[in-house]
Length: 65
Image (cartoon, rainbow, N blue to C red; front, side):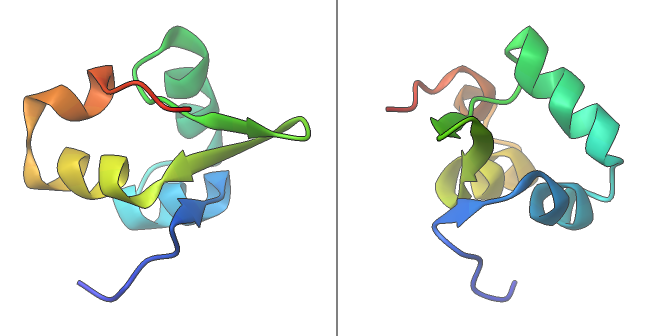
């Protein structure tokens, strides 16, 4: 896998996971995908996304700062 940025946008996460932007927003809203609020914009930690891709179960429950 190519190197991903440390903080990813909704569009970047959607592209990597091959999901729609709407699905990423919904998963964030219901807590399935933790995010960091940066001035009102959702950002997702690369390591959490990589864990999700690799199938590690703690990825969706990991707290973000």
